[in-house]
Amino acid sequence: MTFNTLEDAAKFYKDYSKAVGFSIRVRSTNKKRNKIKNQLITCSREGKWKSKISPTKKTNPSAGLNCPARIYIHILKDIGVWFISKVVLHHSHPCCRNQAEMLKQHRELSMFVRRTIENNEEVGIRPGKTYQSFVAAAGGHRELNFIEKDVRNYITREVRNVLELDDAKEFGKYLLRMKEKN
Image: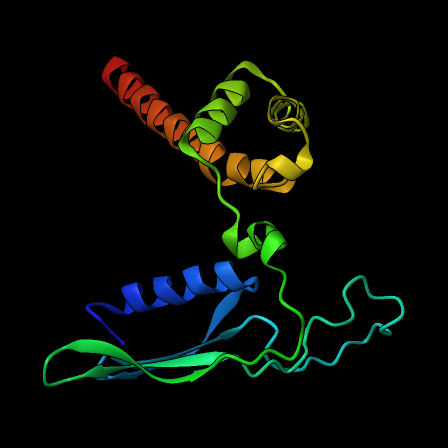
């Protein structure tokens, strides 16, 4: 299978992972002269981690299951086309198609939801209340493809950053006015 760009290949595997019910991560990228020549994308449960917390106390003791599922993506230098050179589809853990939308990688906020969050933040409505309004409108938590933490993260990353930039611009204008007065 061939792709025009590396991003197209990664998006293809991400869409496949959502359809099957797992999430992915880029494990390694090899470069030559500052240009990417290949990339390894694996299941997010690939590898084993040693934890100081005992497995009985952990909330997700099976996070690292040494899952072998992966794809290797290489570029054909002659024609500049990306292709999948190796595929391992077997997982060492069960995949859940019906809950794939709730995996962190597959959750996303629509433009309507983003705009509503921005409007509510401007008028001072707390994120918890904003999320509860979405839950009530959708008819339950299971009908939404995002969680309250996504609402809070959006506010922190996007809305408040814009407000900080506006504050910096206003402060710059204030300094210019003060300079003109003196």
